[in-house]
Length: 183
Image (cartoon, rainbow, N blue to C red; front, side, top):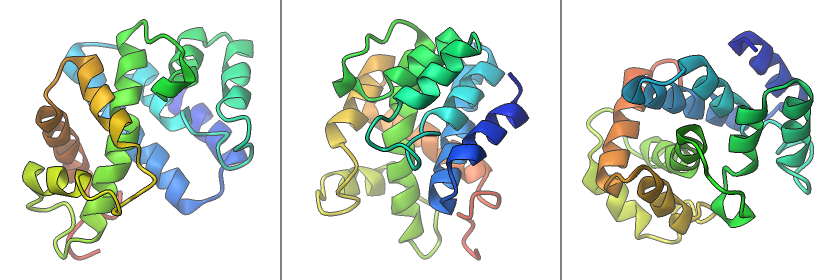
């Protein structure tokens, strides 16, 4: 599957600009993780694009629709990673792909939310700022903090290391994703 095919699948089920942007930011983080670990960048990126593809259209059965679609197309590794991108679904994380999508999903969204409230957005953002906001349970209250920490744990990274990694990825793409200070 190509990225453009994955994007078409995403757009067939997702119309919300914020969810489309989330898919793009997670895609960027996943691609950077693949590069860091010497893995298939396209497979990681496609997993990022499609991890929430059915969320808007089918929230009650998410991620079952996209998982079945991917399995039917023969993309079992991507389907498995998406099936387990939330640890409370009790799908075992067997591969690095499975672990990276957990590490990327909630924390990328959280860091994006932190950046949006800053005057300089992602520019100059420090790990310390994100860590402080993680402790403020009323900020981005829907973000599962336990999931954020589990993601880092799955990669055997310190949470601060993962936060810094994601900040750097988002900073490198700040204009495209709307996090430049003047956007």
